Each structure stands twice: as structure tokens, then as C-alpha cells.
Length: 491
Ligand code: NAD
Image (cartoon, rainbow, N blue to C red; front, side, top):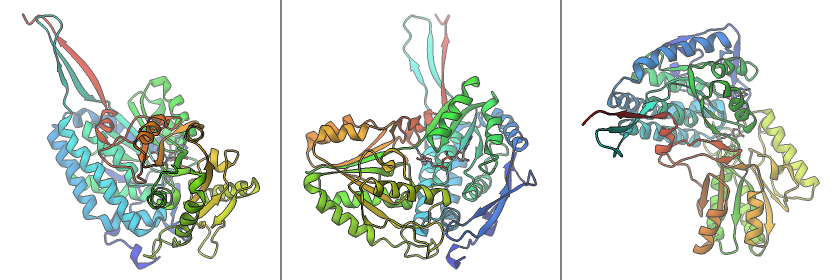
């Protein structure tokens, strides 16, 4: 491993569960955590099961009784200290993200700032969970709407943003006065364990935040305990739509509150009146960040016939110039994909598209000389709706370009998917801008902008991309109940 991916605080690499304020090895079965750039084992973590899940839940349930009563200002101070510690350890956390997830080091460090922005925001919001005093319709009554924490929250996260996904779930939960049990993604548990260590150092009390690691195979044994137990009052999940549907079904018996941030199939539309250079830059940012492994990644790129050739040539030139390599090389702009399954899916999508008539404008193959998990950044021309890359999320560095002729046709195509997370378009016509923004069936719309996420903005989808929002005041509301209190006989 390169020197640039070593940590100054080696104790931030934890290899145990954190339950009731203590690091505990739990089960003797272990799960190796590997560097996707090399396949080298970084360390191992517990491959936990129902016993550890239950212990974590018992701790979170016990701690809820006291944490919910800690004054909001004190909770905010603890969260603020957590934020300060995360930023103070940005280099170590960034290296850890790059080590286990593979993204370039600059992106790893950037993710730490991004994660911290959520922690800071929700720490501040903890002191502003104001209720309402409602004018009573009759005399002698006081009517109030009070905000209360929902209770124990189970957080289940994906591997693509190991710090940010944890931060934007756990920070609002703690701000609201909830306690947490968390199961991080099996490919990237180490960043979340390091964040939990820093939360502990910041003064988050024992039992308030508990984390249990498990392999993909053992994950149901852990999560099913939480799904079936009525003490868990909310599930917050980011990941694939099939797993999200499973969580919704299985939690129905105890009617938990759910926030589901699921898969997408984002359209990116370049109209004939677009600023083409801005559109190319926007697509580069939105599509190739994290090697195309983001849920808001454009998956289908629609380009108006009159600008198609110019756009495709500019884009292919920029994509061909991207430097692919391990995070340990500071020049790398695209790292390895997370694992074999991911590369196989990308390969299958490109082969399917080519078999159905698409042309490879650049890329189009594995980069085996770099390692097993590398795929060349790719642009395909002549893509259409029959291809797998138009129907499923590729989750990799592949931009399939489809030509279109008119606005109504392209909106129909953009919306012709069960998913609705993000949508992007480039146009300089103000009437078209609002027409298209209104017509897109997505939870997030980028107009002449490729980088959309921000802690103060609501992030989430519609249709089979899920429900609930993360970030912003909406992201805090998802961890709160509204209690109506009415006092009579005041005359
Ligand atoms: P995944 O659904 O397979 O895994 C996500 C998490 O769910 C992991 O922690 C995994 O262990 C857990 N999990 C898997 N099977 C489970 C089960 N039966 N019961 C309970 N938990 C289970 O998703 P992935 O492949 O790791 O991540 C990629 C997907 O996540 C993509 O579809 C992507 O769009 C989506 N995603 C969405 C967002 C968003 O904000 N909407 C963000 C990132 C990723």
C-alpha cells in the first residue's frame, strides 16, 4: 500500500463492533475488508449475527430514555464536537475512504468535508426543532404541536459514500434525540467505525450510537432482528430498490417510519439551445465522480440531434483524457470499481449496448493491466431504450448517448422508468427551463448544474427511488413525530 494511504492515527482503523459504549469483538466469525485497487486485506471486522444485533438494540433502547431528555443545546454541542473531530481527522478519514472504497484521495478527502457539512448542519438544527402554538377555535383552550424524537433508529448504508451516508443519517437522528443501531455496507465498514470512534470521543453517551458489522450473507440475520422488533421505530436506508422494498414489507408488521433512498436511472438532457461546454462539464462532474458509482449519476444522456455530433466529440475527448488509477496515485481521477460484481455489470451493459447497435466512442473495456476491478471511462453513441444500460443503473463510468428530436418526446423518454431520483437538463430558454423542470418525474432536478447535493437541500426520490428526504429541515423532520397537546378548562 502506498505511503499516502497510511493513517497518522492508526487507532482509527477499528476491527470490532461498538455496542453500549464499548468496542466488542462479538462473534468469532470475521469478515475481511479489502482494498478494491489491489485486493489486499486491510483488516477484518466481526461477521455479526442476531446476538450482536439484539445487544445493540437493547443498548439503544435503554439509552433512548435519557438521550431524548438531554437539552437540545447540549446535544448540539456534542454533535458540534463530533464535526470538529471529523474535520480535524480529514486526512486520515479521507485515506481510509480511499483505501476501502477505492475513490481517488482528493475525492476521499472531499467526501469527509461533505459528510461534516451534514453533521454541522444537523448539530445547528438540533436547537431549532420548534413546535407550534395553534390558535384555538374555542375559548379556554391551549393547543400545541410538539416535536418528539421517533425512538430507536436503524440505519443501513451503502458502500459508495461510506462517510457521507452515515453522517446524513446519524447526525439528524442524534440531533432529534433518537438513538441509533447501524449496519454499514459490508465492503466499507471501516470509515463508519472510525466515525463512531470520533463520535465517542466527542461525548456521544454509551448506547446512543451502536454499530454492528456483517457480511452480505449475514446481513439479513442482523437486520431482521431490528425489522421484527417493535422497539425500532424507524428504518433509514440507502441502497438498492429491491432491498428497500424488502425492508418496507418486513417492517410493516410493526409499522415503522421509513426513509428509503433507493436506486435511480437519471436522465441528462442536452437541448439544442444549451451551452454545450457547460453541459459537457456538468456531465463530467455528475457522471464520472466516484467512477460513476453514485445514485444521482446520469444513467441516460439524451442529446438533441442538431448538437449531437459536437457534444459527443467534446465529451469523448474529455473522457478519454481521464486518468484511471489507484487512490495512492495523486494523479488518479477514476479509481477501481468496488468489486467484481460491479465490473461484471458494467461489462454486461456495454456488451449488450454494442450488440444492439451502439458505437463505442471511447473506452469500452476493462483495464486489466491496472488490476481486476478497473473499467475504462466510456462513451457510447447510438444508445436507445431497448438496451440494458437504459433500463438498469450501470453504476459505473459509462455514458450512453441517445439522440432526440423534440422536447415532448425526450420528456416522455426521460420519465419512462420506474425510478425518479435525479434528473438534469441544459437549456438557456427560460420558458423551456420551467416547463421541463415541472415535467420531470424526479425528486431532484439539476438545471444547467451537475453537482446538486448540499446539506441545506432536501435529497431524495419519487416513484421506486423511495421516499423521505435527507439534508435540510425535511431531513430532520423524518426523525421526529408531531405530538398534538390540547389543554382545556383554562377559562
Ligand atoms: P444494496 O441494497 O445491495 O446494499 C445496501 C445496504 O443494504 C448494505 O448495507 C447491504 O448490506 C444491505 N443489505 C443487503 N441485503 C439486505 C437485506 N436482505 N436486508 C437488509 N439489508 C440488506 O445496495 P448496493 O449495491 O450496496 O448500493 C448500490 C445501490 O444503492 C444503487 O442502486 C444505488 O442507486 C443505491 N444508492 C442510492 C442512494 C440514494 O441516496 N438514493 C445513494 C447511494 C446508493
